Image 1 (cartoon, rainbow, N blue to C red):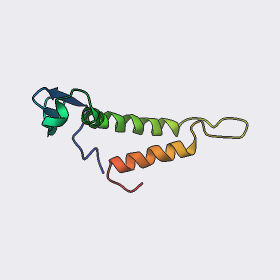
Image 2 (cartoon, rainbow, N blue to C red):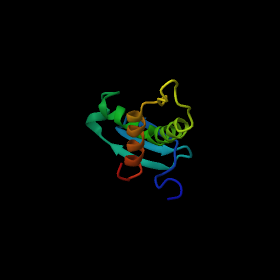
Image 3 (cartoon, helix red, strand yellow):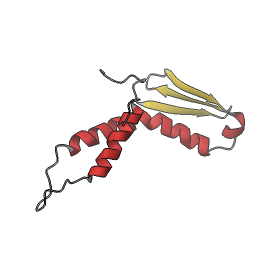
Image 4 (cartoon, one colour):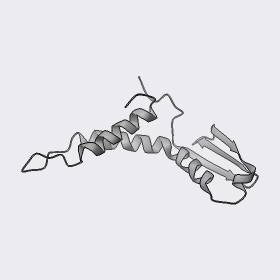
Length: 105
């Protein structure tokens, strides 16, 4: 697989008071549009937070990939040769990356 199969980030969340939420690319191309009149009228709520998380997804994925790559370069801690980042943490990060890329972890 070469490069992301999703719309490249960064993404931005644009909320309006007419109950429309649009996640766009940096150049304004729409990625997702959500119209939810009842949910949006109250200001910041769970829907807003979900949309913020969706807008951050490409940045989070890239940061996680960089973290896993950097962790593989870290030396082992003396005197027992333990990894600096616990293996279960790296396993969880790798599983999250696989999930985001549509692969089995």
